[in-house]
Structures are given as structure tokens and as C-alpha cells.
Amino acid sequence: MEDLRKDAQELFNKAYAYHMMGDIKKAIELYEQSIEMYPTAIAYTFLGWAYSMLGDYEKAIELCKQAIELDPDLGNPYNDIGSYLIALGRYEEAIPWLKRAITARNYEPRHYPHMNLARVYLAMGKFKDALDELENVIRLAPDYKPAHLLKHQILAMLN
Image 1 (tube, rainbow, N blue to C red):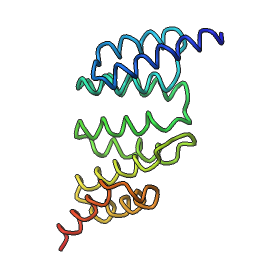
Image 2: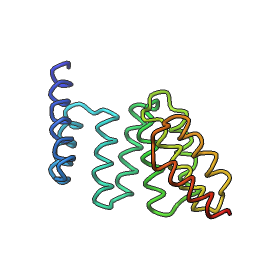
Image 3: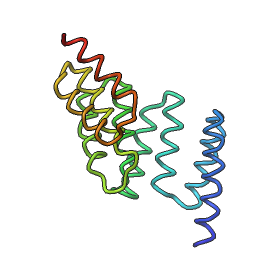
């Protein structure tokens, strides 16, 4: 079993390398091989991310849900589902997924779901809620420039 896990991790690492080089189809192939050998929540999450890069958000969401079934404490797939729903313009649906990412036991970088939630609230015209979430982002990641930029854009709109 340990050998299978190790081999699956090697396939995952290769998949990630192809993913980062932009060869999404090869990355998908390797992620799928890794999962077939030894399924992990992170492999399902990254496979979903790869599909999202091809614009297949529904498939990406389905894969993230499989990741959650394997490890409900991993925050990444909750945040990813939220971001895919944002991309689909389904803001209300994204909110509970992003809130679950915020409270997930195992999640880094923790400021991402707050940033995504700020984007949702901004799209919905809930400026105060968006600013509150941006304050959370800045508290968690003071050097995260996109949060500062978005905060100033919202404040400028309100003046």
C-alpha cells in the first residue's frame, strides 16, 4: 500500500509539473493515473483545477466534490468550487462553499476564500460585506496586493 501511495505521489508530481508548464491535457492524464492508483483529495482537487483551466467548470466542481468525500477537512476544494461558481456567475451558490473553506480545518492559504467572498459580495452590490471580507484578507495576508487594490477601488466607488 505504501508503494502504491508513493507511486501515485510521483505521478501527481509529474502531473503538477505539466500543469505548471501549461500542458493541461497531459496533466489531466497523469492526475487521473495517480487517482486510479491511489485516490487523494488533493489529486481530485488539482484534477478539477486542470479541468477548470479548460473551461469545464461543471466537471471541476464534480471532481472537487469527490475530493471533499475523501477529506472533508481539506479547504481547497470548497474554495475552488466557490471560485468555479463565481466564474459561472452563480454568486449565491458560491457563498456557502467559500464560508466552508474559511472554516476548514486544513487549508492554506486561508485568505483566498475571503478574497473570493469579497468578489462575490462586490458582484452582488454588497459593498460593506465586500469591504469586511477584504479586511479579513488583509489581516491574514497583509502583503496581498490584490486585496488592497480592490479595497481602494470599492472605497473610490463609494465616494
